[in-house]
Image (cartoon, rainbow, N blue to C red; front, side, top):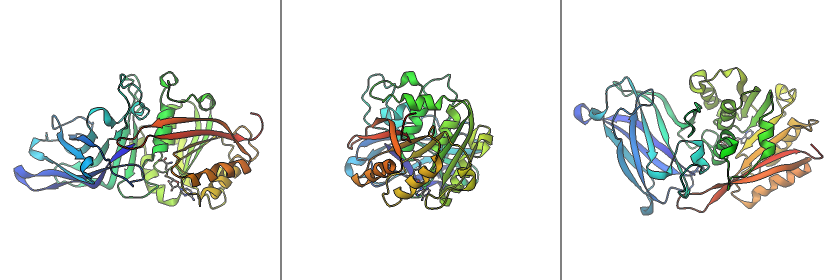
Length: 368
Ligand SMILES: C[S@@+](CC[C@H](N)C(=O)[O-])C[C@H]1O[C@@H](n2cnc3c(N)ncnc32)[C@H](O)[C@@H]1O
C-alpha cells in the first residue's frame, strides 16, 4: 500500500488574485523507505467543513515515479475557491488506485479490474480561509468509509505528519481494520475465511485490549463495527498518547466515547493494575512484531494478559518484512500459545512486489 503524505502542510502564499494554497506531498509506503515508482495522476481538491468540494474539479498533477520523483509541490489559486470559513486540502490518486474505502484496501468491488495496489488519500487539517491559519499543525487525516450506501460508518484517523513510528497508520493495522469492517459475505476468494475471528467478534459484551495501538485504527474500527461491546482499551508508549487522545475525542470519533479509552502500556514494564485485573476476551496486536529486540517483551506481556484465561484470543496482524521476525512464533509457542487460525490477505503494491498481511488468532494451548 502507498500513502500520500504532506511533507509541507497546506499554507497560503502570495496575495490578491495570486493568493494560492500550496503544499508539498510525497507518496511512500508505511515504512517510508521507498517512494511510489509508478506514474500516477494526482488530484488536489479543496473541500468545506462538510467535505463538499468548493473548487469544482480539483487540479490535476502527475506523480512521475518512473523518473524517481520523491516530492511534488501542489497549489490551488484561492480565487477559484468558493468562499467558506474553513477549508481542507484533499489529495488523492486518480483512476483505480485511490483508496478511501475499506473494500478498496481488500481489492473488493473493482468490477473485474485487477487490484494492482492502492494509494491512500490524505486530508489536511482545517485552514481558516481568511487568515490562512491551520487549526492543528502537524496533523493529517485518513478517512475510510464503506461502498455500501446504507452503511453510515466513516472512520476518521488522524496521523502526525512527521516520521514517528507510533503516530501514523501501518499496513497491518489498515488491512486488519478493513477485514474486520467488511461484511462476511463480501470476503470472497482470495480473502481468507477466519471463522474463529468472526465468531469471537460476534460475542456479546466483549472486553477488548489493543497493544501498540499507534493512531488507534484497529480499535476505532472495532468500536464502529461491533454492536455489543463492554470496553475497548488502546495502549501504547507515551509518545502515542497525544494522537490517541485526539482520535478518541468525541468530535473525531462521532461516537459516544464511554466504551473506549487509552492508556500507556509499555511491554518492558509490569502490567498496569487495571489491565492485570481485567479478563480480556480479545487482544489485538497489529504491525508490532517487526523489531525482534522488543518481541520478547511483547510476548511476555501477552502471556501475563491471558494468564489463566483459556478463552482469551490474541489476534496478530503482521507483514513479514524480515526472516528475523519469525522469532515471534517460537517465543509464542514457548509461552504456551498455539495458532488456532490463520490466513493471509493479499496486498498488491503498485510497481512493487506483491505483499500480504497475515492474520493469526492465537489461544493458550489445549482445546477451546
Ligand atoms: C508499526 S506501529 C503499529 C501501529 C498500529 N498498530 C498500526 O498498525 O497502525 C508499532 C507500535 O508499537 C508500539 N511499541 C513499540 N514498542 C513498544 C513497547 N515497548 N511498548 C508498547 N508499545 C510499543 C509503537 O509505539 C507503535 O505504536
